[in-house]
Image 1 (cartoon, rainbow, N blue to C red):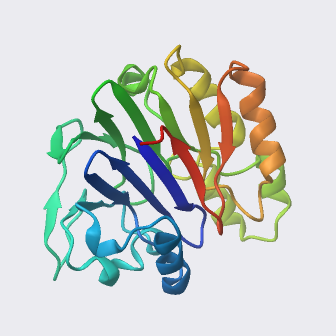
Image 2 (cartoon, rainbow, N blue to C red; image 1 turned 90 degrees about the vertical axis):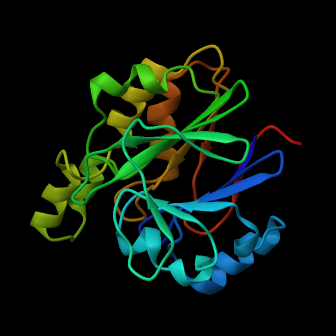
Length: 241
């Protein structure tokens, strides 16, 4: 299993994973030129993917759907004019060599994360949620890899000039995970198999990479590598072929 977080943040999100002869992407937001260049830089074209998985309908996650019009699309919501297969929380489905289960999340639109299984490896992809259900912690325990939201520092968020109602939404159970919440959840689920944690969807206005990293580093074992998602810039992880 090899993966590339091509972009991550409020301006666009896209994640690419390959295992054996199977390749999938999760979400497809952002600028078209950047996304095409990011795919090219890791040796892929969108039409080569076996499937595109969507987490939710916000534009920073689906803005470039037209680039994937030839692909199979899986989503927790309906899409007109696309070959879209609905996904149901906890129901496993297969794409090539991968087994995938959607994980229900808490956002202001219908949203899911994904648990991805390949042979004896396990990857968890969770962004855009105000909290993570305690009942689902067992499901994501001891994964090899976590792509996990660490969106904001609450004090920085409150100091921004964003409207108060937006601040409230971000801080709510239907918003985004803070650095502290993210680190607390991860500390409960990482295990002896865990190799890498990628902190994702970092706010450019209400967070810094240093703050996100410090919160996670304080809670996680020293042997776990912590990587930081970028709005523009590719983060590579997993095992090489």
